[in-house]
Image (cartoon, rainbow, N blue to C red):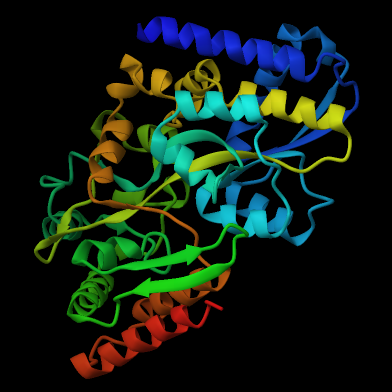
Length: 399
C-alpha cells in the first residue's frame, strides 16, 4: 500500500509539473546553494532539463552562497536575490516579512506535505501557508570524535580529561546563539519567540534568568577554562582535534580527518544534565516572480531538487539527511554514524523556530565574554544579573 501511495504521489508530481509549465521556459534562473553543493546541483539541473525537454534551453546559473548568507542577502535586496535558494528554517519569518518567498504552488504543496517529515513541513509553514520545499531533517548538531582518544563520549568531563591527557582539543562554538543553547536548553531553560502570519515577532518566552540558567552559564564558564577547549565548530578549520561539536554537513571532512578512528555520538552529559540542542531543517525557497512562466519553472525545478530521488542522491554525495520519508528510510541513511548521532540527539533537541536577527549578535556577545574570562571569578548574583539583562534584551525585540 505504501509503495502504491508513493507511486500515485510521484505520478501526481509529474502531472503537476507537466501542466504547470506546458509552455516551458527558455530564460535564465539564478540558484544559490552552499559551496559544497554546487557541483551536485549542477548535475541535477542537467538531469531535470533532460527529463523535461521544454526546459532544455533554460540557463541556470548556480552560485555558491551558504544558507545564512542567502537569507540575509535576500532580505537585504529581494530584487538581486537568487530565484531559488537554500536557507535554514529559522530565517523563514524574516524572509516572508521581506517579501522574499513565494507560497509553494498548490499541487506541489500537497505532495510536499504528504511525502516529508511533518516537522520539516511545519518548519516551512507560516500561518496556514507553505513557503518552502523541505530538503533535510538533520540541521542539528552532535559530536564527532576520535575513538582512539575519547574513551567515554557520553560525559563532557571525561571527554575533556581524555583530550587534556592526550594534548588534544575539544571544539565547541559557545559564542554562537545556535550551539550555545545546548547548555541552556539542556539545563531546562526556554527561549522561544512567537510570530504572526506576516513574520512579525509578537512574544518572547524566556527563562534564562533562573536557577537552570545559572547552572548552564556556570557549565560554559567551566568548559572555557579547560586547556583542551577551543571555540569553533568547523572540522575543516580544526587542528589537533579529538572531539568537535558539528553537524552532518561536515561528515565527509570528519571521516577524512579521523580515518579509521572516526566516530559520532549525541552530545554528552554535562554537570548532571544531558546537553540539548536546536534541531532544524534546511529548506529551498522560491522568490516571487512577475513572469508566470518563470515562476512555473522555478516551482518545477524546486520540486525536482527536493524530491525523494534527489534527496537520496544528495545524501549519498554530501551526507545531508533527507526530510523525504522514503529517502530517509533508505538503509544507507539509517546506518550512517552521523545520521544515527543526529537522530539520537533529536530526542533532546528543541525544534528551531523563528528568532530575531539581533538575538544572534546578543548570544555571540555573551559567549565572547565567557571566552574572555570575564566571569571566571563572578559570584552567583553577578551571573544572575548577566542572565537577567540577556533575557530582558531578548524581550525587547518584540513589538
